[in-house]
Every structure is written in C-alpha cells, then in structure tokens.
Image 1 (cartoon, helix red, strand yellow):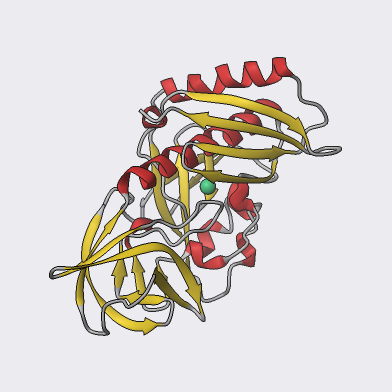
Image 2 (image 1 turned 135 degrees about the vertical axis):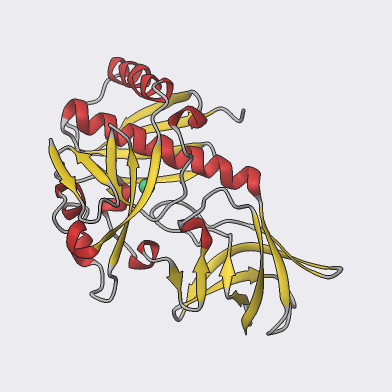
Length: 275
Ligand SMILES: [Zn+2]
C-alpha cells in the first residue's frame, strides 16, 4: 500500500500499487479530466446530483447550442453523454446528446434551437443519468475487486444504462469464476463504501502510482489538476465520469455473461436492477 498526504491537507489517499486501472486508463480524450470544455463549465464534474440549472446560450451551431454552464454530462471514459431538455419561456428544446465540435461542447438539438444570449433552464433526463451513475460505479467496483484479488488489469469496457461490459487481461474465465465474482462485488456494494471525487494538483497526481499508470502523463501540459474518483478502501483512478456517492446506491449487480475475446482477453457482462 502507498500513502500520500497531499500538502495542505486537502485530502488523503490510500492506494494499492496498480499497473493499470479501469477503462479510463485508456485516456482516449483529455477533456474528460477538465472542469470546462471550451466555454462551458461542466457542473457534473463537481456535483453529479444536480439535475437542472439556469444558463445562457453563448454560441449557436447548426447542430445545436453551446451554453456557459451545463448539468449535462458531456460523455467520455465509456460513459455516454446525457439527454434532456432546455426550457426558455414556453419553448422546450429536446437535447438528444452532446458532442465536442472544434473545442466547443454542443448540446445537440433537432431543428431550430434558442438564439445566442437566450437564458435557458437545462434539465437532464435524470432517470437515465442516475442509472448511468450506478452502472459506472458498478464497473469501478468490478475492476477494483479484480485488481485487488487477482492483480489483473482492465483492457477495455463500455456501458449503457443498467448494463455494461468490461474486458480483463485474464488467461481463463469459467462460470464458477463469474459466480464467485458476482458474490464478491456484491459484498462491496453491501459494505456501503463512500465514493469520493477529488481534484489533485498535477504535480501531486504524478506521484500516485495508481494515477501514474492511468497514463495521466498523456494529459496536455495546460491541465494543472487531475480529477480522481475513489471508492474508499477499494479503488482509486483518474476519471471524468459521474458516480453515485456510496456503493449501496449501485444496488445488486448481476454478472450476466462471460466470454473469451481471445488470448489474455476475457469479458464480463454485468446488469443492474432498475430499482
Ligand atoms: Zn470510470
């Protein structure tokens, strides 16, 4: 185990030595680590439970609008972007998703959207988003357990609401293994572990073995802080996603499939109850 007390006492980390972590280990885009994309403040990075907020349209694209701040999750790290509604007076605009275009975060709207300068009230499709938070946290439980118990790292993964898959660098995977794993991960749900989001100064993050190996060195130099998600006592990784605050919110996790994707690459599929 490695202990790190960040100067200033902002927070303490206790982490296992890990060669590689969850799907976010594959830092496929760096924006997910920052609190702002272009002109847009991403509230979900700080507060995953805020469902609606007022904001202003700062740019209009053929595909939709850019806002000064948003409660919508932009997508990244295997978690799809949110959908929802923008309301302005008696007008409602459906947001089907979000897309990064030329460094701007565009809320995708079919047809005409609100004009530049319009004040709007953005509301995220909360049921779907909360399902994705639970699913994302379930994946972190799974990769945390597999690393802790087997020392095996993640090679890929993906998620949709209440269902996900994750690939591991494993030589073999049996039905017995899947059954045992289901039992173990549900013990972690029942352990009611807190899930904490934090920000570390880049210099400090570069000293944490878990984070070094999530390839945070690939982050552009202008990024001075690294967002982290910690399942207390189980898992720590650099992550831009939205998570529940405690593992009990994930609920029962079922392992619904296991398959081989080739030598040294085995896949587990999980499903969550709708609650
Ligand atoms: Zn993640």
